[in-house]
Image (cartoon, rainbow, N blue to C red):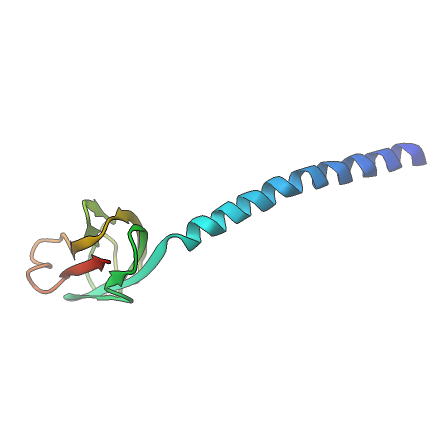
Length: 125
């Protein structure tokens, strides 16, 4: 390869990278904005309780529930018609729901678990 060919390849590569940078930067910015507008609630569940990092959201919109099973048997987390998969001990599942202003009951759908205490109410203000 001649020096001219190498220089042309370097210029072409630098130009291509420069042209792609705004796209990846814009995508990253959109991803951060989506995350910023989604409230995240950490949920720990076991025999037979749920412990939420917060029991309310300050405004309507998307809420991401990150459910961790800290118990010894299968559990899930269900709210507003959506349910995580049943997960075993030490496993985590995520659930994103869009909530309007109001009160939303949540529970574990395993038979008998809600009656034993795995239920509550999440409020959107």
